[in-house]
Image (tube, rainbow, N blue to C red; front, side, top):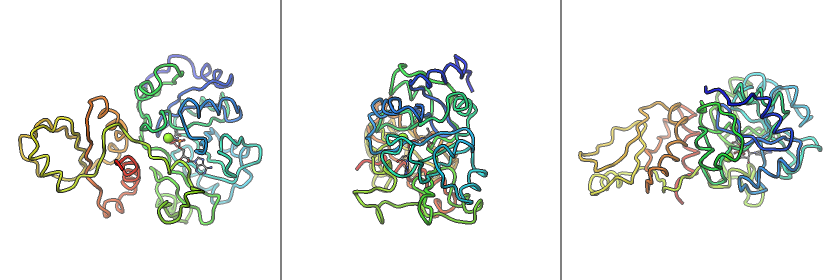
Length: 330
Ligand code: TXA
Ligand code: MG
């Protein structure tokens, strides 16, 4: 991890004065503002170009801070906090009346998470609870490296540099305000891990079956994002024939993870990234692949699909599938 150029306290001071600060977490970089400062919270929406109906996650550094935001902590919630915090699990609770409407986009619930990163925890200890969406412009992939943040915002927002993020996919969001609880966004903490901890296995929410267009359960999930400028699609048999035939593949990136694709030489400039069954690395590098494809001016990204068996074997692959599906060109 690279050393921050100024002490954490000076970044905390900026936050206390109502400024935004970008900080590292174990998942992706967050664009932080003091959770109790309405003007600073509003600044997040303006800076990102974020729709006002997409609520923010409050980041805390101790379980004691939970009571500032909710009175509804069940025994099950307590078990999950003790087992997974700090870590990439966001919990949604019925909120206290005093939580700012701008934070929750007017919902009666609030999302809380304790990030597993020493710089994030230290920043929150000094500055108090922080709301922090991923530190990207709305519609861009979440940033997993400082250079991703600079590419979206230049260097106008102070950034606490923690090097590259370890997990690379945004936290699992588990809604505990409904019965039975439901996973609104799959991530590194899986349904099985939650079941092992508390004896209850939550379903992963599927917008197609139950969502109403007027009242989406997880507002963020209705927006297409994570998308690079290049078109993205899943690899099909047709593509293999096409890639073998085409005279110039130099503006195509092929992402593989399992298959030995029968590609004939010469590949005519085709770029291949092969994760060779290392799904932790795939998750860590997915958004960087998307952003590099833009820098390299790729026209298309073709990704080997995941089989149902594979997704059942390893639920992190289900989370990868979720993020890629949302980036696939409509
Ligand atoms: O890993 C992460 O969670 C990162 C890092 C920075 O902590 N943050 C992040 O924030 O991904 P953001 O704003 O990009 O995504 C927050 C997600 C959105 O899908 C939003 O709709 C959902 O959490 N969310 C926030 N509050 C909610 C609530 N009260 N009820 C349901 N969903 C909520
Ligand atoms: Mg985001």
